Image 1 (tube, rainbow, N blue to C red):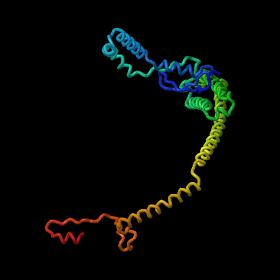
Image 2: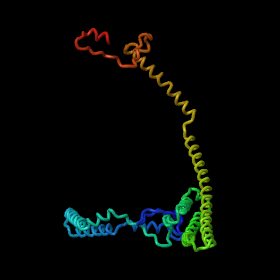
Image 3: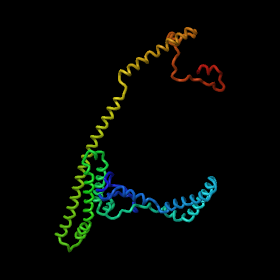
Image 4: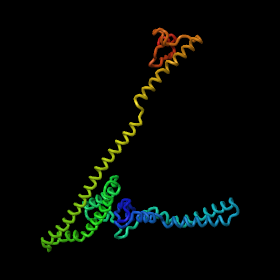
Length: 311
């Protein structure tokens, strides 16, 4: 089955744009990722790196002392890069408007979802659903609880289903041709249609069974999430301070203002600093102002008494 430790459904960048790929069951995912990395490396970038390393190495050998070697290396590297830029500038400008290099998928190595776009919107949607189902079965947290061979078997079944779908292209083309040919008998037209309908029905059954697998794994994922949340809640709540501890803290804090009151009143008596505001009659307590006092200004041509009345 190849390396199924990761999902065999991967995203790739191709010459015609990004797409999703279902790898062949015998093709390891590591091999595909390696080819993507190689495809992303431009030959010009590699040559620039090699040329720069060669120039720096030559300058370090020919220079005298560390400072001399550093200066020679910097000057030579700048000159080489400037010359390279001047020679390759027009080509670089043209490549800015070209698509990024894409990975090449050899025939038989995988199926792209775009490979079946010409078979109709319903078929293309079915293919995307099959690929997404295989990907989810390989990535689900419930995988450790199910048969280890099940994701690989689902991969194999979907791969063969797509192969059957690809082999039905001639039958579909024949059914369309017979439907528009007045010389074709009704029996041929009906037989071709029936063959295509049977293939589509069987592929729908594959998708239905794959949905059943996903329904079960999603239900178990929900159970796992619920169990994990319950364990986390128990752990977090158990770490909270107890009621007795908080009561002791409140009792200890209760005596603090009493202690401060005893000391400040004793200090007041010793220093004869006078009464505190709360020791005076309520009528002498300072009034609480909710709004700042209004200071009226004296208008030109009026005396100060009018301003005093306003204030």
